[in-house]
Length: 53
Image (cartoon, rainbow, N blue to C red; front, side, top):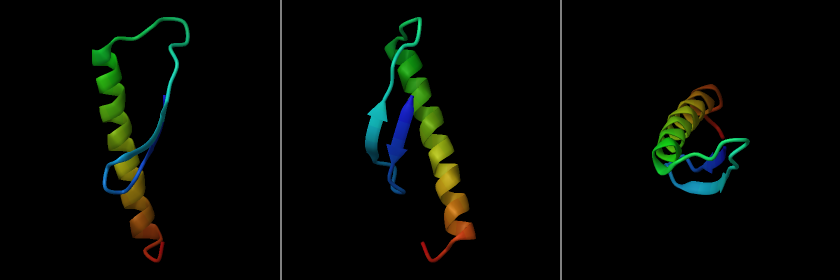
């Protein structure tokens, strides 16, 4: 799953494929929550390390 999000949590792009075994809506929701958490953490690190961005 590829996710691109803004710093206010809005999705810019979603791209995914079931490589081998299809996934259900619950699994998709888990992926989106985990992706949102990770992106939020990365944005926070970037803002801390590069405040002029």
